[in-house]
Image 1: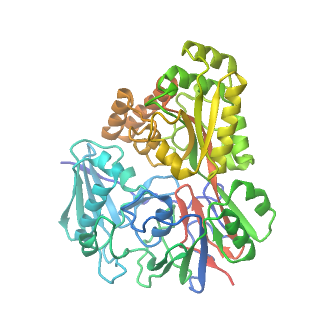
Image 2 (image 1 turned 90 degrees about the horizontal axis):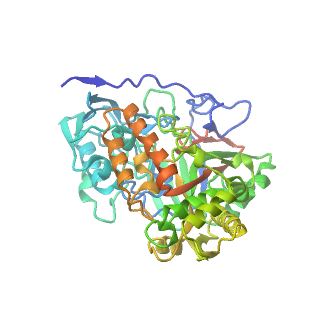
Image 3 (image 1 turned 180 degrees about the vertical axis):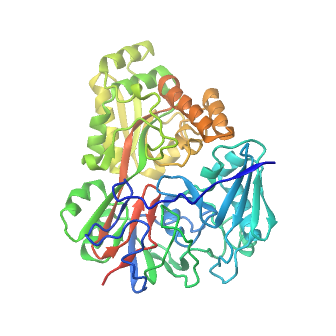
Length: 528
């Protein structure tokens, strides 16, 4: 069978004018792809205040973002994503794919060493990838019963039953990522996860003090790739001896800690603290678009089962006011109708955008009448655990009340929302956020298993066509068709907008880079 080799040499150093920007803004700031000032001496430690406790540090086991944030410095994958969300090699030196995108052959880098001192070979990759295929719902949906097989010591192959335009995107996914571990570690794993955390990354795991910190230290035998740093790929250097992720769930404590110098970097700065920290000359702020915020409709029960009711709500709301109330500063949000991030350019779409942000109360009233609405109470669930969810929900409730719609705003903690959203009799609307995905088939908003349900044959059919298209170009045509259908005929959600995650960085930190794919703590140093 004729095969073509994907050329990976065209990786370029991205300019600072792009959305993905370096964490250090001084005149001496290094270009992306360079580590610090060129001095690769290692000293000191880096204290990072994270807002969440990880459920596990085994990346095969969870989609939790905190697990990815922490474990990506210790574990690596066959492929990863660059600044443009394009898949690029990491532990694979190259990949070949058959003309019909059914057979993917991975040629592994030689001489890559695990943290236990053993060389990575094909048997480790096959064991790791097949475990990931079993545990990842996204991988299972994309690849079915396919499995990785060893060809020789440094070559593995994945053969699919059908063509796949998304295979490389899924393999490079940043959440519940396909970490490569030693075969013996995989073989000893149980339903709770692996018993040892051993990867190939620039830092190795030392200790997890529950509710306190997670500690990693420099891996002296790390072998970086000989390419410029690019997104989650390219050259990585450990420029501090130790990294501590301090688990700091209270937002005000993270703010106080970054101001006092207790922390070098703080994740998830609250939107209401943005202006306060922006005035501090010793702190650099990096707001980076990472997530969509959507209004979710209950399509399994209640009033919102009727698409006419969903259309009425969509027509009624003023999204500009909702985003302003949620995020206050225009630097922190973006009005955008696309389900996929506009910066993931090979999937970005504006199909159906004419239905976005209509702010048309008269049309909304007419649609409510056509739906037979007779004053029934519309239940909007929300939470104070995420103030932007709450603020958005309050404005939506007020806007509907202004045109004579009866709403009930029910406030719960977030775990209760997660439970109640599975009950089709308990709610009609709620606001939720979703991190960017690398391809449309991974979007929870149109997944039939997610809250509210998307049991629609057209959606399922088009998702199947996207998965099995022989080329990305053909898949994009089906994705445009699906987003158009979602906005104009089915309306599973109302996309509200895109918003930023805010990172606060001490002025003493150099080389830290953050983008839509997350924070990159390699190539980062702390100047004394």
